[in-house]
Image (cartoon, rainbow, N blue to C red; front, side, top):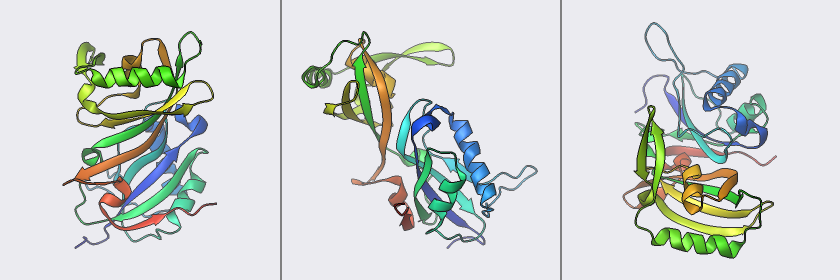
Length: 242
């Protein structure tokens, strides 16, 4: 049973275009402003410095786009889920669009701790701008998955560590030729995790990422896989096409 005034929802949103160059913190500020513009009844934490009960999922790196970002918001009273996506999108910067909302079930697990896999769409090209083909990238993918270890250098707290990202790579495939390079998809586990830039590095140090788009996040429990919007939902509302 929900506590008095508890109305927890999960939002799905996209970040496309120039807005990809803003930080995760700036995106959070944009949502805070949108909530205030729409005068939405945010629930507040207790204590001397009450804060809105808002929590984001996995952070999106600057320069990356996404059609599958998520955040949890707790309202102090019920809001209209049908109109909420359009209201928030109208109050957000161009390029951020709320595409779905769900009323969360009681005691839904934390969003960041729940996601088990992420899907990316990457467009890669040669560093020296020479031509790269679908066949070449396909052969590189085959060779990549034949390896048992894929060590990469990663900086942690000012110290360089070597991390094996091979266990994180569950699936990769070539889609087509893109506007500049070759477009491929990659599914990455979150524990352990691998970054899109690291995937490009192990695919070939002569390659660079032209475009990076997060296309999906998944929560898997007991062999059942769902997107975060529906995994812990009591009710879901998709944004209407404009």
